[in-house]
Length: 338
Image (cartoon, rainbow, N blue to C red):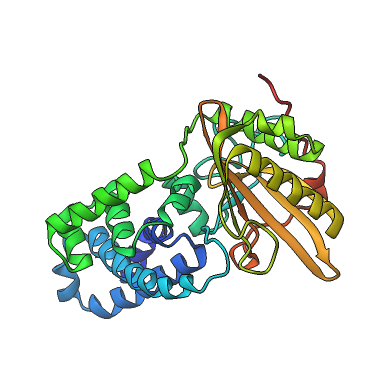
């Protein structure tokens, strides 16, 4: 029998993916997995105890889910006093592509950008391997802790409802109902979303060009009538404190945000990046002397228009995102094709 540490390390990426899906935070996910290790080592430290566990992955997944559930329940208190909107922590990577780091591969594959590519640490590898979509993570922020755990375990990782019920301390029928309500919420209440990579790339590039040009008409061409803009500054940097809804309002807000950034910052830089495997925008500037501004945007897309724009500028949630280097300044915006 392999030693405990070797067995656990073989499951670390899977457990990190589970925790990140539930928590929307890489740092919290890694803490949850480390706590799982401590419980695992304490509970299964003898050969006799280990021999009783036939499916180690299931045991570890259940333990991680319980830890995440406790964190989510305690986080609700923190989020009630949070300044502005709450968005997840994105995983940001450089663009792949045969023509250099500034040329995106619409499929999100290739050297440096696929499931195993640009991610240098276990959390990033796990997130990319499990295809942790940032759009889905964003929508799941509106779920209750029990709904989120039930949805992630069943719909993402195919955990049976009797096992989910054990995690939640409820019946299998109640666990099924929680997952169903969560599924309905993320499919009906959030912005429409299409995952076509080519369409996503074209619209993100068009959005960036329109914002850079300051042309509201060009921006309106890429926004859906019911588009929603959500920002998370943690009370530290300017963004939308409440959701902005409607194409005209979103266009005015996005252009105003760009103008404000131009007036109030120095050395403003933008580049296209991968946000959890899909195309997004990274922004960097000096907001005030000695105070850098660092932001990431991601989008939902459907029927040839942007239906949702999400703006993360809370520095606590971007601490692990690599800054734009001198090389990054030269990254071109890909041409917009009809």
